[in-house]
Image (cartoon, rainbow, N blue to C red; front, side, top):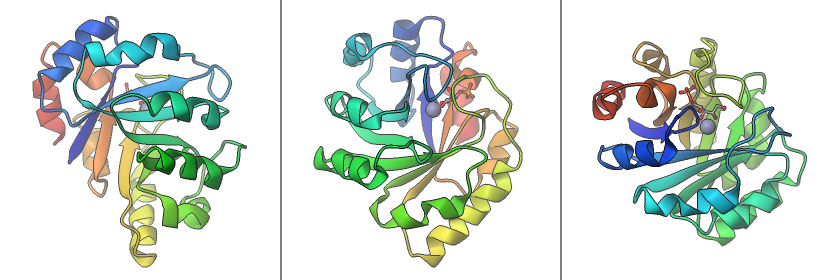
Length: 208
Ligand code: DX5
Ligand code: ZN
């Protein structure tokens, strides 16, 4: 299982990024929230762009924003492997997926807990990743929504039936117990479970 670490709940971001850089975590998951698509607002790009000073890990960018087209060119400048935005946004989805690909970055769509997996069907040919939200997006430290377990299985069947190789990633409320409900995924994102602990590597290893 691939693991991405979110620092949304971190109390000392530079310090936690440096600590994560010493672990075998696969990706640093950057949550970008604009205060419009979700209630929360994260650090502006003019600060986030210095992330390379604290980590050499590849970045998995999760845009929780109303206008992905504004943020894609910015986050494409970093050490970014994936950019994911939400299917619930109102901009032209196909156009934004193509914009990400033009930067030679892998593209993903995130789906909120109430969004059906079948809504992904028109976009399957373009996707490198699907990010299944297991909490309502915006805040770290929430409880994992158990129905996600069924949804992940349903998504796996859907991808197999369309012969699509996109990765399935799960985001929100993941810890040692809820990890068991994510077995069919390829990647999991964990925030507070890792950053609230004294031993990041131990927590990361417990999720693999
Ligand atoms: C939720 C974010 C998640 C979150 C994960 O809006 O997209 O990435 O920070 O944090 P935990 O693991 O604390 O739920
Ligand atoms: Zn996230």
